[in-house]
Length: 437
Ligand SMILES: Cc1cc2nc3c(=O)[nH]c(=O)nc-3n(C[C@H](O)[C@H](O)[C@H](O)COP(=O)(O)OP(=O)(O)OC[C@H]3O[C@@H](n4cnc5c(N)ncnc54)[C@H](O)[C@@H]3O)c2cc1C
Image (cartoon, rainbow, N blue to C red; front, side):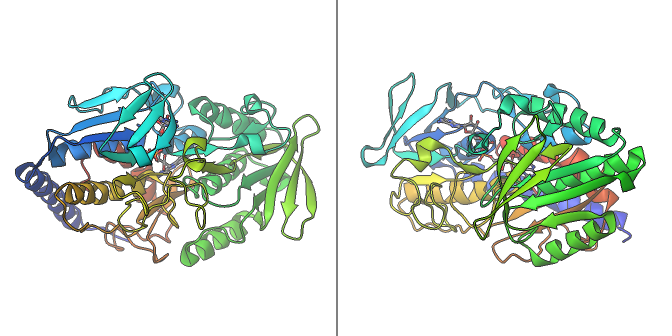
């Protein structure tokens, strides 16, 4: 679809002006307060909300607690697998470069939440008091739930997993290239049951490895099996149908309700639990693992955890992002128990919701902002094409840009260029608290 240059320029100028106006409005309406705000977790959501609140509030003591000494740009993990990025520094940077000087950073681990006493406990500092708490501790990768898997094996013996770490992203690319050049074999790609960050990533990994194999030739000597514990590929029907069409063309077979349980890396075998209680054994020459995920233990074992629909995740109202039982607690990012939205794109759209509602709470006003569940997934098809998928609680496609500019169902070079070159700067701006697009 042709894009008019004029339209793009107008959109860019409009977004820029809207953003500048938005920032200016908050600068002029800053709320004076001496509130102590503690943010547990300083990843994408924690750093971004600290900076955003600093724009909304004057005089607040904002503290972030996180033990990780560096920032990890996790959406770049698929670009490591793609070979577009090729070193740790492509996804790792310092926390300091994003944090406003007014925000205090404590290099420490939260060990316990005590919301009845407005306190949290940490490994080294001890107790921290707060007036308001924001939980942004992300989620935990549960490789420990896969019997027989030693995470140190990732990146060796034809085992790949882009989720684990920057190093695993780089090593996964090497394993994928070795598989592509091996002359033939069976590739298995797993998807766990339930909530996960970037639920599109297991499919992006499948597409990329299949692309490398095709590039290397002898595609007919390879088999591709996508084993998902769910009974769909993607939760949005239109996207699900489109991917099935593409996978049929590319001869990638999917298997529903196959829950990856165990692995033997020497024998190159994997076992999957099925819905009827059975176990299916599969052989592989290459395996890409997307592990089960849960909220971190400190959240899931605390009184802040949801005990019903989103077990273990932070129990928040899905619109206001305020905790359902502790009104001075908010959450955002991967840790919140909402039906969808474990992406950095969701964090971007949650920031002004949490900042607006927390400011309203400080002013003793009704919470005015509602999150619509916005999330996005650039479905990488190969090195050069992607489909930009955006949706919200309605589970219907939506787009930040007009459909004429980005058709979410078309294999698009523009969407690939956005994934490769545009999302990172937008992410960096988000970390600094700005959300222009
Ligand atoms: C392979 C992959 C591909 C992805 N692709 C995309 C994509 O294309 N688009 C997209 O929008 N998103 C993507 N994402 C998802 C995105 O990276 C996450 O949704 C985002 O990072 C969530 O931010 P967060 O702050 O909630 O979690 P994180 O960024 O993971 O941060 C959580 C922080 O909490 C800290 N923490 C943990 N435990 C404690 C504790 N006890 N005390 C204090 N701090 C603690 C951690 O150290 C960490 O810094 C991808 C993720 C992966 C892994």
